[in-house]
Length: 205
Length: 205
DNA sequence: GATGTAATGTAGACACTGTCAACATTCGAT
DNA sequence: ATCGAATGTTGACAGTGTCTACATTACATC
Image (cartoon, rainbow over the protein chains, first blue to last red):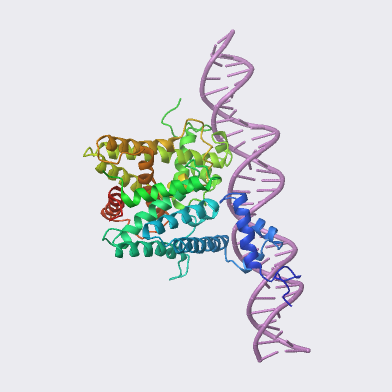
């Protein structure tokens, strides 16, 4: 009799997701390093070894958390691009804003995703949600190339510049090395817009 | 009688640096997270509380290690730019190559510097070696603006694009999310050169 | 040169952590 | 109804960061 997905005695019902949510909450409280598996279990209301029925490791829990983040990232970027059908340039800017915005709003998970703590080969083969996010960007670039808006080069090459610049911006901000008024969303839009515009039209001349 | 900076009995002589070196060595063996203060002390040949005479915290040790990394980064970039006096564009590319190369060769320390684990406000006021590296880049940009090679914009704005794109490239590589033949240095040069050239001349048209 | 004080290193303890092994409870197919 | 598999618990172990108390040494001052 699984009533409403909360606890109903000995078995939890949906512990795996409960653990992930608890972990995400604790992650924003005590930074990336200060997450304890036992505290996650405590918050979820189970014994300190219960997580091992759902995750092989502490690393596996973090990996699953990072995977969630990659999925969110992919969704946010494609949504942003889809809602701005004013041509590839605007789409690129919109995707960039979505990227940086999500990274800043979930700084700890972003650090998890790209912090190097996780084994990049840990995901199952052919099952890398991180590539989807890059692919979304590459799709925008390709449409821009075909529309004659962007240079006639390998789309991978052009997408790489867009990717690295937005990623670098996001990383510097989440690390706290770029003083920006994060409370004011317009300031972030302007910052991302500035970087994106320079990427599109170049530094030179 | 301080003979040759190695151990000479009860007192070590230069324990602080010995600890930093030991920590750096262990960092490349076990990743960024798997560094134990006790093991650092063990490698340095002292008791497990000796490090507390030189660092308030484990975090303080890591902070000092990161500071070393920032100083190296600044030196590598300015050296690279100084050795290539063929105009701001080439200097920018050279600095970028130096940046990414150092990051890849010292991936773990780079993750330490930018991983968000450290408190960005932990450094003493006015004493932020991280800004020096950015300033080095900004100097190149400024000379390029005055020479009429780069756009007539705020140097900070232009430097930001160069900074973020190189930083993003370095971060993706150190995190292992960009498959590149790291053994072949020419491949890295080409990759950085491609990104830099696209930053300079833009994606558009 | 002797001496006292600060700097430096050590020993032991504490709470906490990740993980393993053994055991308990419950779900679901037969 | 029954039995195996899935899920959760208890207890233990080694390892960790950090605190307190103590030992040893260096060095400025007389």
